[in-house]
Amino acid sequence: MSIIYGVFSASNLISPSVVALVGPQLSMFISGIFYSLYIAVFIQPSTWSFYTASVFIGIAAAVLWTAQGNCLTINSDENTIGRNSGVFWALLQSSLFFGNLYIYFAWQGKTYISESDRRTVFIALTVISLVGTVLFFLIRKQEDTKAPGEEDSTNEIHGDSSSAQNKLMRAVDAFKRSIKLSFTKEILLLSVTTAYTGLELTFFSGVYGTCIGAVNRFGTEEKSLIGLSGIFIGVGEILGGGIFGLLSKKSRFGRNPIVMLGIAVHFIAFYLIFVNMPSNAPVAPMEGTDDIAYMIPSKEVAIFCSFLLGLGDSCFNTQLLSILGFLYSEDSAPAFAIFKFVQSICAAVAYFYSNYFLLQWQLLIMVVVGFFGTITFFAVEWKAAALLARGSDYSSI
Image 1 (cartoon, helix red, strand yellow):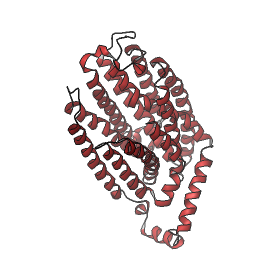
Image 2 (cartoon, one colour):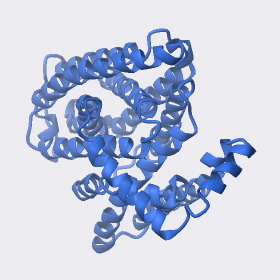
Image 3 (tube, one colour):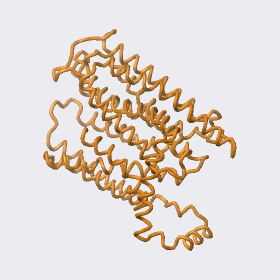
Image 4 (cartoon, helix red, strand yellow):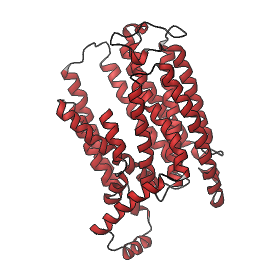
């Protein structure tokens, strides 16, 4: 994970140039191929192939996320960006639900995962990934949304835009715009919110499952609870993305209430985790821990917190995607690259300190960064509301 996130962070500096050079659709397809190859490595893993694939998946992830954000933006407008962001997030996170659901039932009661079981899972995942990669070609291109007259005039004016020199200039220009955009007031403010999503991403995807598996008082079900936790994180992500996407046009107050809901839900989850999980759970030895916190560890509370973590995460990410697509509709690739750069850096930092810090300190860090991230998001959203009010009805977002 350290290799993946390190390469991912660095690659976000060049991903806008790659997308500008080859286009979002081809960028997603090529990245999808590398994702499929990375999954295929686990069919017959070896040390050299695993580390090599980790480098390539870090590069591919940066290009894929930038291209996805660009594709989402050019196929949306100010009236649909909120809805499309929510639907995109719900579909993206459905893998958490279905993947963990299969593992929970297929491997239930097993203390040893056979080579046959492992190969079956990763062969199936490789095939699914390849099918999904091919489906990228069904996404409409930007020019598909133009009227015939507009397309003709554009081609006439930019007849040589496909030349190698023009493509290189666009790539260099995309890199320059990324650097320039990084120091704008809005991006700097949103970076605090993005940093929080990176910290809590590491927590719910890596740390929290480890905590559940380390609590010996959960009995023989402690390992299967990890899969169940992933299922309920997925339920929260899908529910949040679906609701906020479908109801976005009916909101008269913009994005701030959803972000407020997200931080409130996360603070409740953090408090319940604090009183339910032993403080040494993240750093417990292989044998686990018999310690208790402020109550007897409850499986029900642990799984409920998983749902809250997923729901809160969807609140933040859907609204960040929405506001970036709205504010930077003309510079969506650099904006989304910066978003993933900051998020991945903070996720990597969180992965590092999660091996050393007790649970309460990890929760405290997220509380502090989450609080200030919410405030900075509000500041940017108020400006976005003012901008939109000059041209159209803000309640339509």
